[in-house]
Image (cartoon, rainbow, N blue to C red; front, side, top):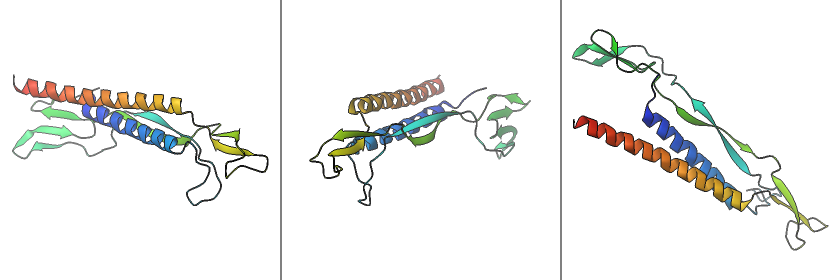
Length: 168
């Protein structure tokens, strides 16, 4: 089994970008007590879950790699490259990586605080606010940012290794 490192790194970068966007949305709505249409309603903290992707759903079968070389064939379903005597250069799946599985609302997404001066406070002076901890969100943002950087570094290093291998 082999994996396309660019698919893995790219999917990791995409997943971490979604996580950073979700965290940014949480931070931007840390004090939101109204819905976008102006109706009363507290913003509920969102979180992201990921899932592993092991293979691509492409199912096309073998095709000629080049029109002038019928001995070279590429199977996009498995990622196998067959040259001449069916010698496989890539025994494995076409792609792999990570994918955003779900963006979901966190449990205990609302906290009640006493603030009689707040315009959305009830008759007793309590107001419902999003249960978002700024410190936790910033830690999550830094973590996602570093994971994004790590994936970008992997892709850049593999590109450099491939370029150096071509110069041998």
